[in-house]
View: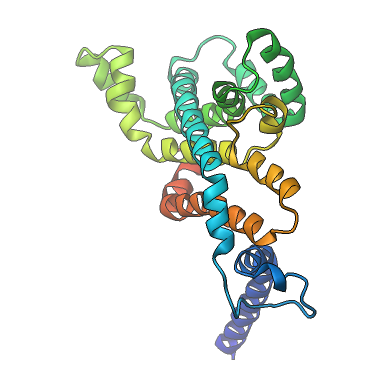
Length: 276
């Protein structure tokens, strides 16, 4: 009897989970459905719930018109990942193992930095970039997007590296390794999961950024895909299949990366949560 009740409870929870997942994923499905719908069927009543007569004209138009924006977003994402790792890896190591003065204050400031709204930071960057000549540049967007990822990366690396046994560091020093050699040859290989986690989040934040792009790169011909979709809507309001096709294509890299790196993310996010 008890086993039967447990099984019924499990089935009920599974059913609720499936229904809630379906509700949350329905916009994604509808985006895919519309991307395959012909322009003449967009206003059909009732709407076409399934792409019975699919067309790929939206994807053809999207790849033809938005491919440069996709390449720009890829370049910005990779640049953001590189800059984030260059800054946050040594900073996390220093806070975890070198223990400089004011480490707790730095941790607090990093937490506060993550709470600042992106639109506020965008206004600050705009005022700075006008003087530095970085408006409407890819480098400016890479620096701006990195400000979202660096505090997260420093805190995550600090939490993980603090859990590396002190005996490992001491053994390296006894063998004559300098602090930089210890960091490069021992700490970095052990930090693989956290590096993958920070890299993925940094790339996704840069890939999906719209606030910085619309504020700091509005008049440039080299634009990321988020701004490209925004402009595309204004110029092609009747070609919703092309707009949705662009959104589907832009979603594929993020989905692919999440599927490939999910086990590393789980290990990286929980790194440092429990100490032996």
